[in-house]
Length: 168
Ligand code: GDP
Ligand code: MG
Image (tube, rainbow, N blue to C red; front, side, top):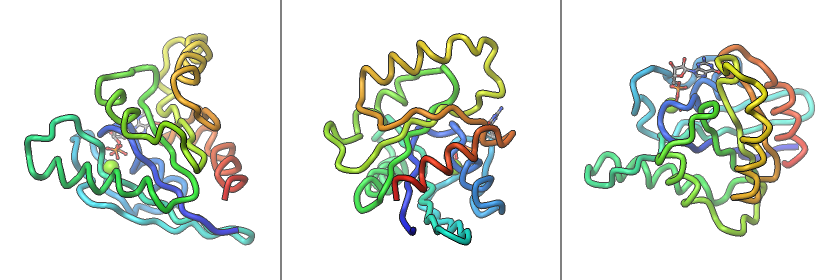
């Protein structure tokens, strides 16, 4: 199996970290500083039975005033078409206006599976809040699956990978 997966989300949620850890090499620069990823970066993950091409995108910004932001948004939005799976990534339980904006850019009736990846679960104080959070977001958008992970600590990445491969 072979396919393309794009990872979208507001800046700093951990998109580049996820791609690097899934692929097992540092292809995309990560940083605490937003806007580190300015262009689309592709990473190719090859295993015996499948190959996934990831598109790591610049974070989607709400401020459209700066030309750089606009170009970064266009690059992120353009990766929503022509891929096999779209992943929207969020940072733990911290839903922000930036996430709201990303959600508004997703197609209302997606023709490819859209997965919600809840990243940074390693830093969650109360894991019991996770389930109600998943339920509230599932009620707002037809996510095909919701997968909590820690990209940095490599928690639950196997489950994520399995979910991706199943949808290629
Ligand atoms: P991007 O802007 O979405 O590409 O985010 P980055 O991958 O550059 O990560 C932004 C920051 O979040 C960096 O400081 C990462 O080390 C941190 N980060 C990424 N994933 C995790 C995670 O699973 N847990 C924690 N605690 N921090 C993370
Ligand atoms: Mg990045």
